[in-house]
Image (cartoon, rainbow, N blue to C red; front, side, top):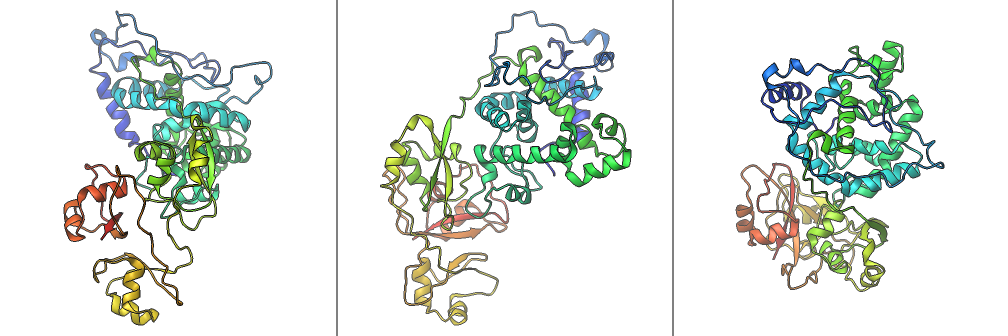
Length: 470
């Protein structure tokens, strides 16, 4: 499974080059926390290879302010001290030290952002793994997968905090379609990731191999075990049975975990941790507009989408019988009361749809589906007879004409778009927000608001964007 990460070869080269210019930094020699690993008595990595004698990192002279790192929500007690440990024994492998140096020096700023985002999700992740009888330290896997970023998306199509591929996400119960991508949901995706990791451990009976399979896939790890004749990850990684990415996957995670548990020791000070995510899940059984749900929670749309990044369109899916949404616990029962008074979007789930192909026109579609052009225009609230390639159309049938994709939304005055519907436009080469606004007789501001975008959004060929239609 390909992940959201840099090239390993560039990473090692960049780390070595960056370390040559680092001075006045804290010493990076350390041991893994006794709760997560037990290092052997091998000689520590000789940093003289990276630092000339006159440029070795010196201890900081100023006192380092204390930073409160995220703590496990479950202290070690007599009842839970028998919970499984992620790494029983880890060798003092040079690659662990290399990643410690890389995160501490070469990639310091980005890793600092990861640390600051961690507090938002770590407590819930650790709680979920605890409840499922898994090692809580598995939560740090999200750090190297996505940097605790719900919107992380790789070139190979992996998405969310846990970088699920589409097929794996659906296998573990996540809904992924044009309207929603639950791989981005911090609650649902974490539960799915916990179950996936549990299944991998049941298959390989080793957390190291389970993590390697999470990265490379079950088949490749099984082949590597058969080829080398051992289930010891640290022995297999000394061979060519694993790719370089998989060989360094666990050392990278160990290094990230060590720093996250004691950031001050590695020079990460003045961290501004994000507030912890404290939500409950509620189910909705009808389609609502995102603006309406945000109003029901008494928050801006941007805050609602931060809690519910799984919604990738302007409304919740119309054909789903039940959708889970994350609601702040602090709201109490007010959201449930407000939900009953929200207007339901007029999305007809029974109306057949058709995606426009090259050469299609309203006249040709009228003849093909035996529907008058006037009804096609009315059902889709088209402002002109011009169709766009890959545009989605409602095809009316029977005597009813109630097949509109949406009625006039009841926005508040702060979010009023005064639109009668929308057009699904597929970005083509040369498109820009200004061109689309001029072509569809709308404004850039309305397009940005409808799609929850920023003005700096870069349009990519093949992406879909919703255009308010008059």
